[in-house]
Image (tube, helix red, strand yellow):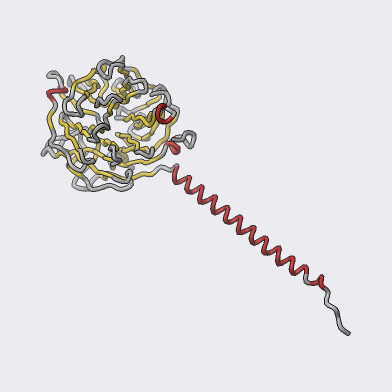
Length: 379
């Protein structure tokens, strides 16, 4: 007897096969979407992360310690990191040179150390670089000397002594910066400075100097109240100047003053209770203006503590009246710092830091506005 095949017997096998293929496709699609989402998340995390690059390391290249960083970006995008190379110790006074490293890739890698000035056993101190946007030149103040580079920091002119232009006979000493100076909207170059008038550590005054001819001739601007010294300067959106100063009044707050005549006179010195300091240096820098980017944004960096530690960057939207955004770059020992912004909006903060001491190294932090504000603000 011939047994007829039952066509329904194979249907479950066919359905099971189709179901398995379908489930496999669904699983592969889910995996593809998960990988894509993970890759996107990783990419976004990379874009909003903070990167640390060691620029100067104590004990290397013939120097005991590197201190007093200054940072600028040229009109062509070269990043220049200056500091003092102290040969025999970390002391402020002694045999120190003014040294430089250059980066042409936004601070990712750095060229060899260049010695801009070696004055024998004497101290070369307080780098204060300024960029002239009209000519592309970089002008560097140090002690009472000035030198200029017109090739992105590769070479420098012989230093010129300008002490007769910017000092007074009864001053015991005077120094620029340290940290970057600025160029005003009208082209004037302004460098923050200070001078010493007496034997006590508190016998100090902040002041500014300025040049209207690209850094050839310099003039003395207005003087600030006693017990202020190392300072950093900013041109506000309304054209007034803001000077933020180290404060010797014993309050652990940064001092500040305003000028409405391009630095010739200053308001009485006040204190910003938000900007806590251990009597140390700080840096202020414009990130953007409302005219060009829709918002006025100003950056500030210093060790936000009563000790030299906790290097912090802050952000102001109201021209330095308040600082609603703050983020720590380094929780451990830290001291002097300087700020710069690249053409693509990357923020660079060059600062002293270490594990046990703040002068173990000078490190560059690179980050975005998005990282600083936790994606609450975008450039």
